[in-house]
Length: 326
Image (cartoon, rainbow, N blue to C red; front, side):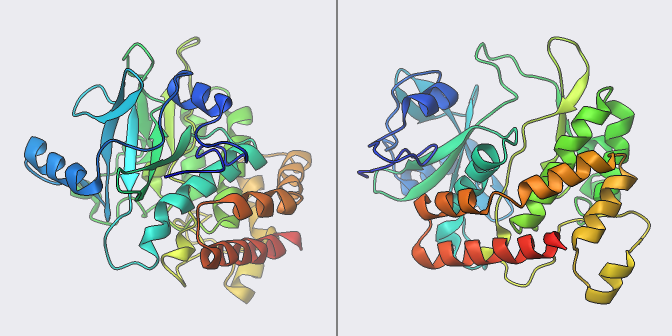
């Protein structure tokens, strides 16, 4: 696949990863965005080596590592996760890799959200896929201690049923974070921003397992990991709920929500107060996120999405922006 933009940051004038993305993703190595294998080979190898397909939801994922200057499949010591086009009954599935890549890039570039390094790659036959660098594995192979909030909350499918990832609220996640994070006043602002981000970009699948803590190697305390699995799910599941989890615990609803059945600025202000943000801080975060519409539009225009999906992505975003203005 010949490109005219970086398949990492989407900056124009590049025929592969720019220097900045090479440093962030591949330790500075010159890596080809075209893989040496095709998806059929990918699937066959997965069956041959593991005996079964590893499926999370509707998406096959596989582990990659660097060998010299090439990304290769591996069953051990992988530093990258490869996510090809998923299969299933949802809509526009061939746009999922480009969707996740765009959403992650908007988070990092426009809103300075600490998120997993990522990019686009292409199978040998030109089919698109998404790649992300594991942040829980150091360059020397050591793993950082990390737990997602399903683990922290003690919820599994065996103990709490198939809906265990969704049977919680964002307010309750904040309560758990306060219990385990010594730098809670700083970290909770990051959490509030990602909740707003997921709302603005219609991520209806930001469940318990999509939030994690890891141990700070230098000081030994716990912090939020870089954020990951950011996706505009409305492109694939039209009409789904605004958020994966309720904002509030104990079935609480604001009067504004009762009137319109949609989260608005009133709800997020109440949410911010409940999780301990000061007014001057939560207003700065909310209003700061509403001033970036031109930057968001510019990145959407450069994305690997097709034109129809670009229009839908932008439309859904602007609807959410309007809800948070008043």
